[in-house]
Length: 274
Image (cartoon, rainbow, N blue to C red):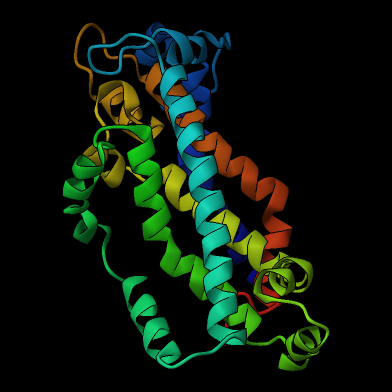
């Protein structure tokens, strides 16, 4: 009974995908003449090609390709920086404790639950730095906004590592960064996997910060997808819209398919628990 219920929930959850994929493989005429959940009579990838290369997202008709690479150029350094800085913060807050450590961690923990709308005034900071409306500005925004979560993940992992290991390394003459790179980071692989998957998903799927802090050619994929779907010139091509939505979702889907089991192992290893 339990498994039947789980299967039912899975099927219910997958219904939108079942609608999207067949629709993306149909022509506009077949969509008009057929049923929403009907399989395509003559599958074609023309809608996918158009969504990638020539679909109009606002005033540009270059498809999603340039915006896809904008997202890649934004996500990779933002994930790397926020993960690395979060690891250092978590390490310092647990193994190199100083006066005010708990206060700093409490403030960072509080900032993890601040809604993203609160960081909108950062636009003034980006303007002062000359990064307004650019991919590099969005990298900075996501790096700073992601520090609270990445610090939380690594701090909760490192707090379970014995202090005796660090103290022994100190007696042998190892310093802050040598202990961090040679001892702590190899042990923190589960926490790193959890952090990377979490940050990648959050940053890739973000729309609000992308639409606020970028302009035109520097828009990430999510903003371009919104512009493409809401473009009202000509015939409404639902097959192109569906193909574009799937293209935008594929990277996060692939990340979970490839690294999902490591994500679960990281959670079980204590990456997000006290």
